[in-house]
Image (cartoon, rainbow, N blue to C red; front, side, top):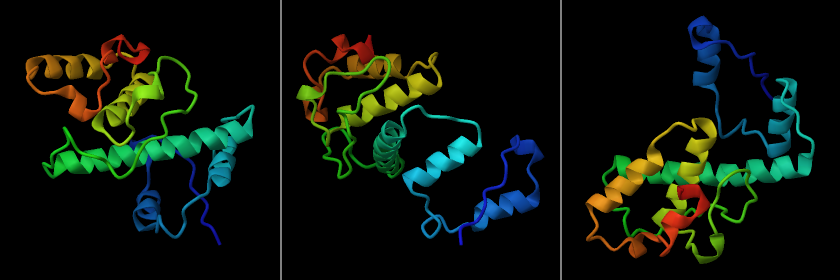
Length: 163
């Protein structure tokens, strides 16, 4: 039997019981499928016109998030990432709204693919972020490093995502 998720409140108003509910939840045992996630989102007032497309988007975003988690773990443990081949590869061919990159010359197991997904998600959540500017500054500062080892294509700065 699946537990009901309590309604969302601002963090300050959460009770100890609600916080305990999330702390004690076994996320592997009670993992929701994409259709169950859609049902929960609909219950919260978020509607989708095309449910098949919504499930596809949720599946692709879950790949992106797994990739970002792996990247975060590598960075947190001071692992080398500049020429690393990542085991989890993001789905880059996904149709997205807004600016994206030409996926034909991108190696999805390299750092550039991970950074593109992160930049796109950051732009979606907070359009005023300076992540892309910081990446450009960092790469210009260390211009002796061959960015092709990181999976960057030749014209990466001309891609719509990076303009």
